[in-house]
Length: 119
Image (cartoon, rainbow, N blue to C red):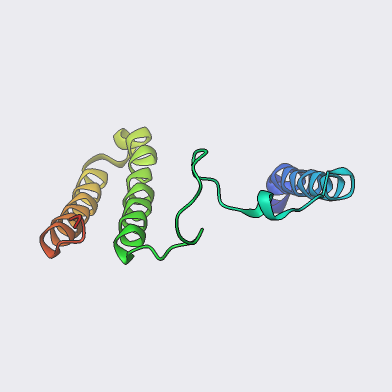
């Protein structure tokens, strides 16, 4: 009985996956494929590039990206809580307060450890 409720979601997932694969397949068959050295060269706003096309980036970029995604996902939990806030009453308030406190402690720790500083 409960699996029937997920049938539309499953159908949508299957159809969207099939359409995506079909588009990739059709573009591979009918799309222009004329690779050349000029096309594969890195593009630098019309200026001839200096150095290699791929460079090593500092770990700081990845760290900030991961922190952004982490906090972004955690903040998403605030929306469902806000929608049913009145039903949760005091328990919901205390639980979200603890959640917010943990987030704040994590942010302060990252700030103090220098994870958000640029060199």
